[in-house]
Each structure stands twice: as C-alpha cells, then as structure tokens.
Amino acid sequence: QVQLVESGGGLVQAGDSLRLSCAASGRTFSRYSMGWFRQAPGKEREFVAAISPTGGSTRYTESVKGRFTISRDNAKNTVYLQMNSLKAEDTAVYYCAADRVSFITTATEDYDYWGQGTQVTVSS
Image (tube, rainbow, N blue to C red; front, side):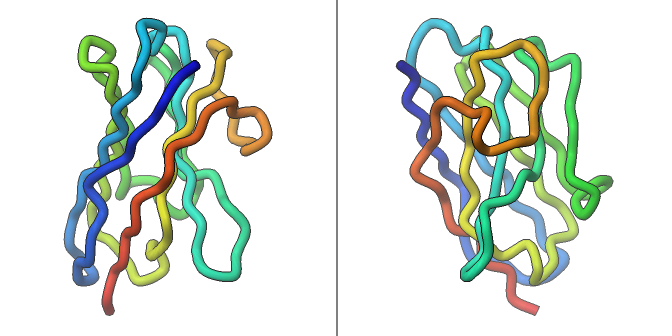
C-alpha cells in the first residue's frame, strides 16, 4: 500500500509559478512510476506529467511542455511538479498517482494509488 498526500496548491495570477509536492508513505516509493493528473470542473481527469522510478525518464502532455517540470526525490519519498507561466486553463484539482511499473504510462486506469488532490486556481 502507498498513501499519497499532495500539497502546494493555491490561488495565483496568470504568469505566476507554483510547486506542488506529493509525499508518499512506504519503503518502496523508488519502485513506482509517478504521475500528475488534473481535473477541471465538468471535465474528465487528464494526464499532466509522469516520471520513471529513477527519474531518468519523464513525459508531459503537450499543453504544459516547457512550462511544467516533474521531478522526484526518492530519499524523501516525494515527487514534485514545478509549474511556471501558469494560465487560467491550468485551473484544476491536481492529483498525484503511483504506478507499480517501471515504465511511464499516461492512462489514469494504469495507476494504482491516488492522492486526495490539491486545488490550483489561476486568475486571469
């Protein structure tokens, strides 16, 4: 079992930055691929970014490339999402998720554990 707790969300203006954190319980964090997803009101949950267990591989959805950076610190059991140049369309609840495989996947159904989410609101 892995428990995930997100933090770092908030209300910011367009163009600002935020860093989300996701702290994981358990001693096997370094074996999981980790992902960030988001869900805006009235929309389905969508993939944002993912990182392999060692951090050597990352993947991003097209709309955040060049603005968001996913990283992880396996010694701290934490994955991060640095979000720069935020836009109003980035407004959503952001979730982190853990996948018990070594390769990156973008499908929500492939992830085994989810956090409770953190709200990010970007005003224009």
